[in-house]
Length: 121
Image (tube, rainbow, N blue to C red; front, side, top):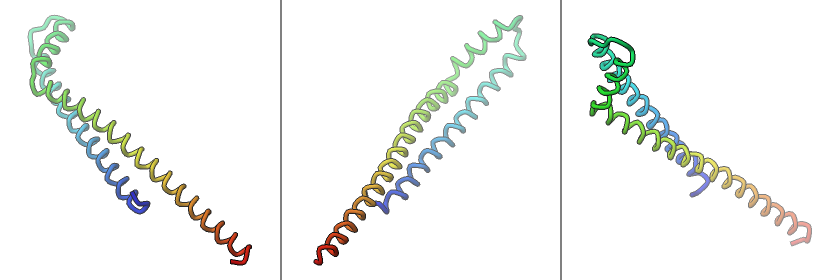
Protein backbone atom coordinates (compact mmCIF):
# COMPACT_ATOMS: atom_id res chain seq x y z
CA UNK A 1 0.00 0.00 0.00
CA UNK A 2 1.30 3.44 -0.86
CA UNK A 3 1.79 5.98 1.87
CA UNK A 4 -0.99 8.22 0.54
CA UNK A 5 -3.51 5.33 0.65
CA UNK A 6 -3.24 4.73 4.39
CA UNK A 7 -5.46 7.63 5.57
CA UNK A 8 -8.37 6.33 3.47
CA UNK A 9 -7.83 2.78 4.73
CA UNK A 10 -7.75 4.06 8.32
CA UNK A 11 -10.95 6.03 7.75
CA UNK A 12 -12.70 2.97 6.30
CA UNK A 13 -11.59 0.76 9.19
CA UNK A 14 -12.71 3.41 11.71
CA UNK A 15 -16.09 3.67 10.00
CA UNK A 16 -16.53 -0.09 10.25
CA UNK A 17 -15.76 -0.01 13.98
CA UNK A 18 -18.25 2.84 14.47
CA UNK A 19 -20.93 1.05 12.45
CA UNK A 20 -20.47 -2.10 14.49
CA UNK A 21 -20.71 -0.08 17.72
CA UNK A 22 -24.00 1.41 16.51
CA UNK A 23 -25.33 -2.08 15.73
CA UNK A 24 -24.23 -3.29 19.16
CA UNK A 25 -26.09 -0.42 20.81
CA UNK A 26 -29.22 -1.13 18.75
CA UNK A 27 -29.09 -4.80 19.70
CA UNK A 28 -28.69 -3.88 23.37
CA UNK A 29 -31.80 -1.69 23.08
CA UNK A 30 -33.74 -4.63 21.62
CA UNK A 31 -32.57 -6.87 24.48
CA UNK A 32 -33.57 -4.24 27.05
CA UNK A 33 -37.01 -3.88 25.45
CA UNK A 34 -37.60 -7.63 25.54
CA UNK A 35 -36.45 -7.80 29.16
CA UNK A 36 -38.79 -4.93 30.02
CA UNK A 37 -41.72 -6.71 28.39
CA UNK A 38 -40.94 -9.90 30.34
CA UNK A 39 -40.52 -7.95 33.59
CA UNK A 40 -43.94 -6.38 33.02
CA UNK A 41 -45.50 -9.79 32.55
CA UNK A 42 -43.89 -11.01 35.75
CA UNK A 43 -44.90 -7.92 37.72
CA UNK A 44 -48.57 -8.70 37.17
CA UNK A 45 -48.19 -12.45 37.75
CA UNK A 46 -49.10 -14.48 40.81
CA UNK A 47 -45.60 -14.99 42.19
CA UNK A 48 -45.21 -15.17 45.94
CA UNK A 49 -41.53 -14.33 46.31
CA UNK A 50 -38.41 -13.10 44.56
CA UNK A 51 -36.98 -16.55 43.70
CA UNK A 52 -40.25 -17.42 41.91
CA UNK A 53 -40.08 -14.14 39.95
CA UNK A 54 -36.46 -14.74 39.01
CA UNK A 55 -37.22 -18.28 37.87
CA UNK A 56 -40.19 -17.10 35.81
CA UNK A 57 -38.06 -14.36 34.25
CA UNK A 58 -35.37 -16.86 33.34
CA UNK A 59 -37.91 -19.25 31.81
CA UNK A 60 -39.63 -16.53 29.80
CA UNK A 61 -36.37 -15.10 28.48
CA UNK A 62 -34.93 -18.52 27.78
CA UNK A 63 -37.99 -19.45 25.74
CA UNK A 64 -38.14 -16.17 23.79
CA UNK A 65 -36.68 -16.74 20.32
CA UNK A 66 -36.27 -13.01 19.69
CA UNK A 67 -34.32 -12.62 22.92
CA UNK A 68 -32.08 -15.58 22.17
CA UNK A 69 -31.50 -14.30 18.64
CA UNK A 70 -30.62 -10.85 19.92
CA UNK A 71 -28.16 -12.32 22.43
CA UNK A 72 -26.53 -14.38 19.67
CA UNK A 73 -26.43 -11.34 17.39
CA UNK A 74 -24.88 -9.26 20.17
CA UNK A 75 -22.13 -11.83 20.64
CA UNK A 76 -21.42 -11.89 16.90
CA UNK A 77 -21.30 -8.10 16.71
CA UNK A 78 -18.97 -7.83 19.70
CA UNK A 79 -16.61 -10.36 18.10
CA UNK A 80 -16.76 -8.55 14.75
CA UNK A 81 -16.01 -5.22 16.44
CA UNK A 82 -13.01 -6.71 18.24
CA UNK A 83 -11.70 -8.06 14.94
CA UNK A 84 -12.31 -4.70 13.22
CA UNK A 85 -10.45 -2.88 16.00
CA UNK A 86 -7.46 -5.20 15.58
CA UNK A 87 -7.50 -4.53 11.83
CA UNK A 88 -7.69 -0.77 12.46
CA UNK A 89 -4.70 -0.88 14.80
CA UNK A 90 -2.78 -3.01 12.30
CA UNK A 91 -3.39 -0.45 9.54
CA UNK A 92 -2.35 2.39 11.84
CA UNK A 93 0.83 0.56 12.81
CA UNK A 94 1.68 -0.23 9.19
CA UNK A 95 1.17 3.45 8.36
CA UNK A 96 3.59 4.43 11.12
CA UNK A 97 6.18 1.95 9.85
CA UNK A 98 5.72 3.15 6.26
CA UNK A 99 6.27 6.77 7.35
CA UNK A 100 9.44 5.80 9.25
CA UNK A 101 10.73 3.86 6.26
CA UNK A 102 9.99 6.79 3.93
CA UNK A 103 11.87 9.16 6.23
CA UNK A 104 14.80 6.76 6.42
CA UNK A 105 14.91 6.55 2.63
CA UNK A 106 14.93 10.37 2.38
CA UNK A 107 17.82 10.50 4.84
CA UNK A 108 19.75 7.91 2.79
CA UNK A 109 19.15 9.93 -0.39
CA UNK A 110 20.23 13.19 1.25
CA UNK A 111 23.30 11.49 2.69
CA UNK A 112 24.17 10.11 -0.75
CA UNK A 113 23.83 13.58 -2.28
CA UNK A 114 25.97 15.11 0.45
CA UNK A 115 28.65 12.45 -0.11
CA UNK A 116 28.54 13.02 -3.85
CA UNK A 117 29.02 16.79 -3.34
CA UNK A 118 31.84 16.18 -0.88
CA UNK A 119 33.72 13.99 -3.33
CA UNK A 120 33.04 16.44 -6.15
CA UNK A 121 30.82 14.31 -8.36
